[in-house]
Image 1 (cartoon, helix red, strand yellow):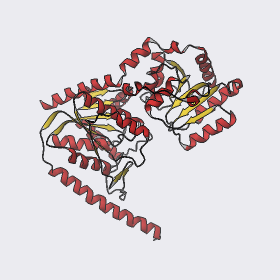
Image 2 (cartoon, one colour):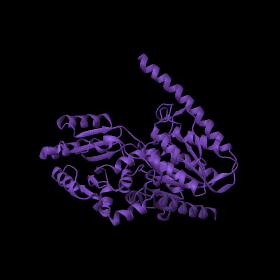
Image 3 (tube, one colour):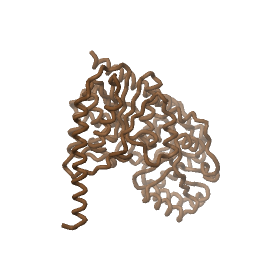
Image 4 (cartoon, helix red, strand yellow):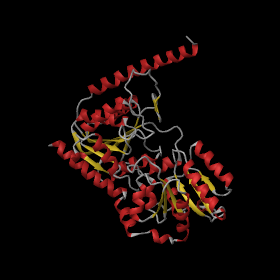
Length: 452
C-alpha cells in the first residue's frame, strides 16, 4: 500500500477510536444525569454559532437570547467555541447581549469554530448536517451547564441542524418543551450550504415529531414543510420572520468620508456577501453602462463586505471595462452598515433565489431605512415584499433595459416618495422585538400545554 494512503488510514483509525470512546463517554454521562424539576421561564438555546461569530444568522439568534432575557426569562446559550480570529463586528454583536444571559461554550479540545477536529472513518458515526459529533459536544456542554433546575423550554435554531438533534436529546431527558427554529431548510428545498442525506431525513422527522413548536422564517418555508410532511400537526407550526433589530438601527453612528458616498456619485450599494456567482448581474450592469456611457462617471456600484474570489475577479473585470464604476469596501459591523445604508442613493438587493421562501436578511434592514430599494431578480421573497411596500423597483434578472429604466427612475424620483404608508406599516410589523415577543407568547402557551 502507498505509504501516504497507509498514513491516512492509520490517522483515520486513531481518530475513529478517539471519537468512539468519546461518544460512549458522553452518552453514558448523559444517561447518568439525574432528572431535575423544570423551572418556569427557564430557556436553553442550542446553537453552534454565537457571537463573537458574526454570520448573518447569528444576528437573529443573539436577538432571541437578548430579548428573552429582557422579557424576564432565565436564558442559557449552549454554543460552539469562540472563533480563532473574531472580528470587531462579532464583538459589537456580543456587546448587544445582556450580561444576564449565560453563555456556555463547547471546549476547543476536540472542536473548533467549524465543528469537530476529529474525522472518523466514513460509516463509523451517523452523517448529519453540521456533524453528529458537534451534536454530542453540545449535549455534553449542556449537561455541565444545567444546575439544580432544568429548562422548561429548549430551543434549537438551524442551520446547523445538528443543533436540533442535541436539543431533542436534552428536551427528552428533562421532559422540557422543545421548540425548533428553521432559519433555512434542512431536507426540504435544501440550500447549497446544508449537507443533507438519508440519515438527515430520519433525524429531521424525529425532531419534527418531538417538537412542541416549529418556527419558520417565512410563510413559504412553512408551506413547503406542510406539503412535505402532511401528517405534522399544523397547530404547532408558526412563522417568525427574521425582522430587523432596533438596537442597531438606533446606534448613533454615521457613515464617514467618500467611501460611503461613492465620491458624490449616484450609488447602488449592496451590503453583505453574495455566495453565488455575480456574473449574471454584472453582465447586465455592463450592458446598462454600454447603453449609457455617460453614466460611467456618474453611477457606481458599491459592494460592502468580503466577496468570494470568483466574484472579486468579476468585479475587477467590470472595473477594468468601466473605470470608476465599482467600489469594493471591507466588511463592517451592522451598526456601521446601517449608517452606510442611510447615505446611499439606492440600496441594491440581489434576489436570485430558488423560491420566494428565501428572504435575504438585508431586506428587513433595507426597508427599515429611508432609502429606495432596487431588487434585481424576481424569484426570492424580497420581490413581493418590496412591491407590496412600494419601497422601490423590482427588475427581472438579465433584463438590462428594465435595469436601465429602473435606475433612470430612481435618479429623478425624490427619495421621500419611497417612504410609503405600506412601507412604514411593514417596518412596524417586522420590528424584531415585536416578532420575538409574539414568539415568546407562543412558547409560553406550548409550555403550559405540555405541563398539563
